[in-house]
Length: 76
Image 1: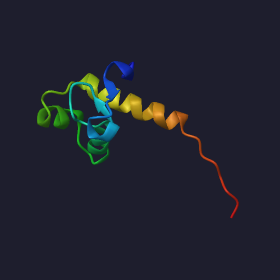
Image 2: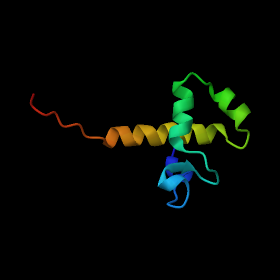
Image 3: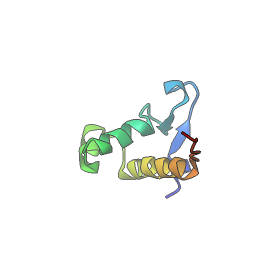
């Protein structure tokens, strides 16, 4: 899955948050729905203009961001 094909950052949409291309739906919103227990089918039923590939792209984007995250421990 190449998330770059489906996710974009448009400074004039949702203050530049990553969104699904052609929508005003933020990646964080889709990931949050999944975290709250929504199934992919629930999301597709409620937001019928999305595809399963869009949802997978949101997860792939989140995974990519987390993989590049660096955590630095500070002494107590």
